[in-house]
Amino acid sequence: MDFKDSPQEAEFRARAKAWLAANAPAHELPAGVKIPDTEEADRGRAWMRALFDGGWAGLTFPKALGGGGLTGIEAVIFAEEEGRYRLPKGPFTSIGTGMALPVIAKHGTDAQRARFIEPTLKGDITWCQLFSEPAAGSDLAALRTRAVRADDGSGDWLVNGQKVWSSWAHLTDWGILVVRTDPGVPKHKGLTFFLVDMKTPGIETRPIRQISGMSEFNETFLTDVRIPDANRIGAIGEGWACCMTVLMGERLGSGAHRSGVEPLLALAGETPGDHGGTMLDDSAIRQQLAEALAEEQGERFFQARLRTMVSKGENPGALAAMIKLAYAGRQQRVLGLGMELRGPDSIAADPSDRVTPDLQYDYIYSTVMRIAGGADEVLRNQIAERVLGMPGEVRMDKDIPFEQLR
Image 1: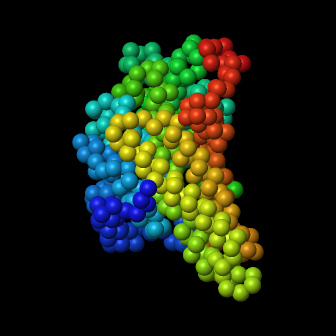
Image 2: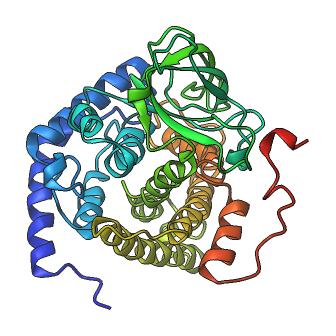
């Protein structure tokens, strides 16, 4: 395989690089400084609007839906070049573009697509994900948040329950929500998918203070939250299929925004070695960096292949789990190596150091990625069963109605 850009890809990269050089610096975040989440959210919206105005939003979305109609490899190329800048991107922006829009585009109605896709690409609407619950994390289908029809004849739904680990739910406009509408069938079959306005009465978000000092995760409580049936995505009881579309988008997007190895190559070249020279002169360090870079490049092209499948209407299925599993483990290893390169500074950085605080934060956050979007163990099961064709794990609750489970 030729890992170099084709002439067409090289031309696309040059255009992307030129546009980013002219527009990205004005939106960059300060290095080594954590700004208030409200400011980061405002900056995220502004960057999304700049991307839309510049014609760089929704690159793989069909043009008929407001996107660029481009290929997966072109999206990866743009993400690589965009990742060279410290831009306000993360769950605040990616949940909308990488999770909400794919499920609306695939399972929604024309009216829903017209209402939500373009405003989301512009940054006018931002999204959170209301999936996980205290007793339904890796086993998402065990969720207990309930929705029942209102008895006033309106057709609306009343939702009661609790969600947790809801990234940015305290600042976003809308949420993608999966709830149980029929407890009388097995757990995967009684779920329904909704879009919910986060300003609806009965929604309470409580930020969770994290080990990093930040609070972008939330507990979200829903008490008699009224949702119009027009905000239902897909048919009643088909919520699990919608969830799989969301999770595939989340997994395909893992690590797409920047290289984790290239900054460490520069860092190793700038860090004095133990025996003169720099850390990059150490053969063991070079070996670890080379292995990580090879993995990253392999994942990049595999990711482009799967994105191209999606753009053609094909479903990568459990292949997307391979992207997420590889990225999460590699990210933690690479950031751990970065901490080792910093030596004692990785524990107590000098106040003037603007590199190490970011590295510390990313290293702590990397543990999240071993769970978010599918825990490592769950993904390994999916790959074993659905990609490698190995015998399935024994599931005692597979055909039992949810309300009969203990």
